[in-house]
Length: 157
Image 1 (cartoon, rainbow, N blue to C red):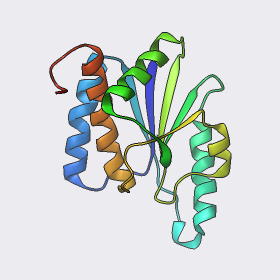
Image 2: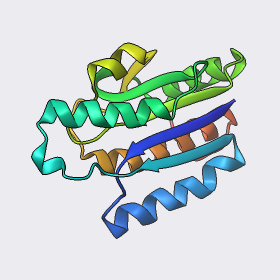
Image 3: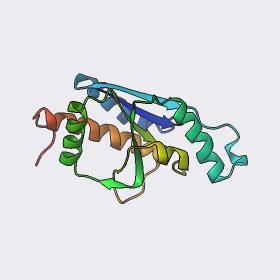
Image 4: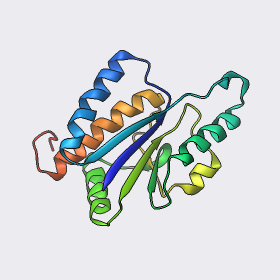
């Protein structure tokens, strides 16, 4: 199985870029992984929130294959502990899925079309984080999940 992280717009803050890079280098030691950054929308100031979500949704859907399992990182999704997330990934790995796609949308969330295409919604917290911070938090949690599955000492319980 390959894990694919799809995000909208580049990460602006250097401290976030540095943190994300640390985990992007570590994760492939455990599982095939790729992060793809889709460009920010042009002239987004002239679009309503719904129009932005629709246009971003179209960009995201173009990146998806029919057999992909899609998980939206969404504030209204299911919350899990790090150990529960690791077990969730383990089940996906043994299920025969070829590509598990996690999606971090833009600042206004996802289009209705993308919600209907998704298999699952996952929340990282009840708190709201910027979509750029979520990249770092998710990358760290993915790395943590892999170390949990391997029985390595990164995660303390």
